[in-house]
Length: 116
Image (tube, rainbow, N blue to C red; front, side, top):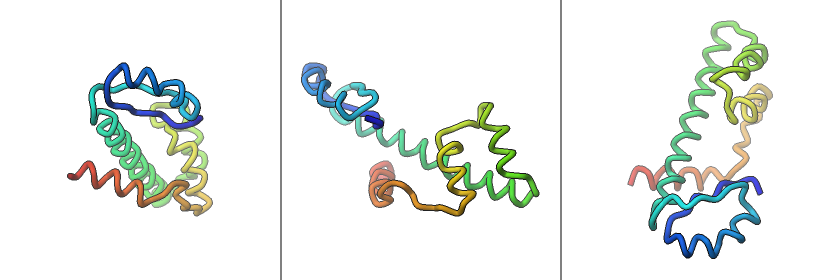
């Protein structure tokens, strides 16, 4: 019940499967005709990957600048820099826990679809 279902297709078909989608999704939305769900997923992956890269670079910069990274995280989580990546991945990164928490090959597949 934590995923977001990004769907493409006809409204009538979407309405038929919506009760099933609601069993495992916190939200489901029809984004337009066939293929629009996949394009929305691509946008999602672009946003996630660039946010993770930005967080990694910010931590490296913080370390090299001699900042207390935990204090920096605490402060910035209260403003516009707050994100899922900062709150969930940041603490793990500080512990040097780089387990991705998902299948990297699926992420790479999604990014290769974008390139195609």
